[in-house]
Length: 483
Image 1 (cartoon, rainbow, N blue to C red):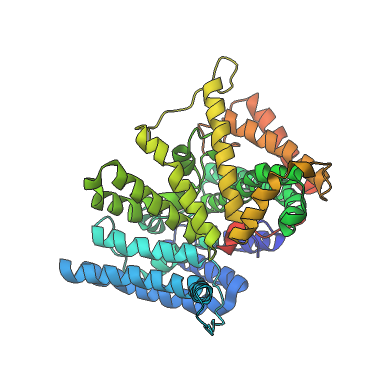
Image 2 (image 1 turned 90 degrees about the vertical axis):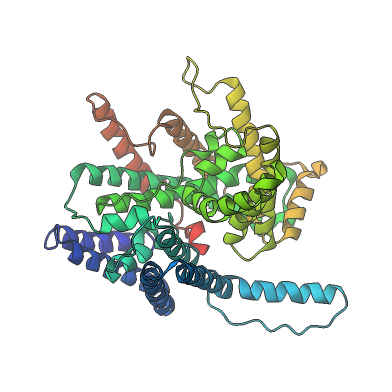
């Protein structure tokens, strides 16, 4: 049941009516309805893994209570057990077979015969997201940032909140759980804002990202058979497709949350206006980046503080590798993380690693030339990293790069889907112009309601809806639901 499907609209409509009419301001009953809806939603997507989700929820709920009841030494033990339980769950379901295969290849390469048997392990949808929510819960309880909730329904709803369950954002417990304890009645302005954000997300996903699949799918399915022009174009286009797909999902999830009265974590803040990789990662998949920064980078940075700038570099590189391998079981993800970690080194050496400077426009409303060049350079660097990210193996990445530099193969673009690509690039340009204009707001359609702008705003809404209906690509799964 994709979040942009008619079936989801029907599901959400029924929940909305129950949630706001018979259950208005009945916090406990509303939470029960959310939990039932969330488990139903997950059951439709991955019924066999629903018991796993419930079992982990019980374990981490219990650990939260035990941590608060215990003295410091035992509380630390329970916290460690919680972190280990989350990591072990991820390792078993996501990484075990990968490591078995990798060690088998390693032993074979040095002449040792190994009969490596992998396990028939089914990957649970959303596991990378809900395990991180649970891990952050026990850590924050131990740090005293949040009191452990004794309301199991509230905790279970935090873990399994259906808009964010399969692909984020990754909400923190101290931001989300208190919202579950407050009375919620229908907020017209927040619901309208959420609806706008959903429409914007659908536009990005269905009009831009899904149409680009027609071109990019052909390229990635046969990298060795593509000419240099096609590969260069694919490398430059893929970041836009990934952004439109993933940020589109985030916009829809956040919008659904707003309609239900919740403020969900912001996940993107116009990353392609970043002038270096540090700015990029502060604005791309922000809920994951901040999670790994708080729980991996900060402890490492403290531990390596005595090593000076070399310690900071090492902490950043490890941090980025963790972000890379979070995405999946492929060495290309580790290379992707390492690559981005290395890109931070010039920023650390120049003293601009943590520097934050607001981007401004010139008298024409455009970026200053210096900023524009930095944005373009950052985009190119990100594009190279995303070739690694999307490659099925290090070998495919090497093939991609090798063929890019086979200039003798330059020729006419022959990949199918170029018409859809041209159409989606046109709308991507509109998206970026809108985002530049609205870069100080949460998302591009978040505008003032002052008349005559209001008239124009509604005209834009109708135009967007018409474009979505007429020009949407064939429905594709969301990329990040695979992680």
